[in-house]
Length: 225
Image 1 (cartoon, rainbow, N blue to C red):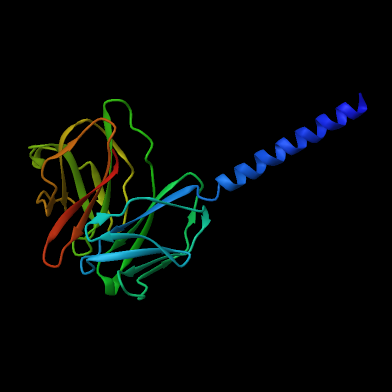
Image 2: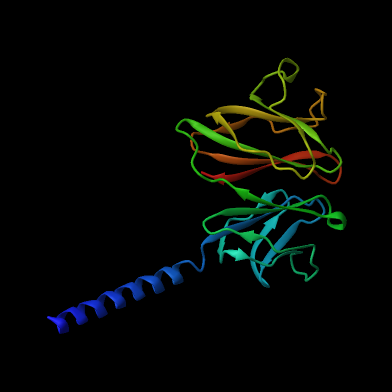
């Protein structure tokens, strides 16, 4: 009986060791990160993590997510095809999280924002939106998230005084057609208007107000679905 018990104990130890090693190996790539290029004078940017290029993003768009090891990572952003570092950050990327690195403003005065994304599904029948104030020439903004065709003179801002470089909390809205408009605080003139944005149930979008070389525009990032 002792020999049998000893063999059973050894088997249990080996099984636990195998489970531990398998779990450790599986946790090496357990966070996701992407780059959103909102820098008007950079048509294409590369993002490096710990010295290795992982994604490329064109102006006004975000790359796809890429899996990297969680923890403190060395993140750099460079114009594509160069080794001129514009952004150099060391964010702590939590296990199981999604992160977006936004490059805002122009390359000579670049403004990096590292934001944690919430890509958990919205309630049934709803979509989620968040807003990034990314237009340096516009600065702090009021943001209206309204049903398409709504006169913003008749409503209060959904988000008030969102400072340049700030990321709003997520707004849960019923699926439908919307317009997102950016004004200066307390005013009703829309410097940025997304036009009609159709949102389906389960979708998550990030809307970034930004400058081009001569005007203002909005980038709509498809975070989920």
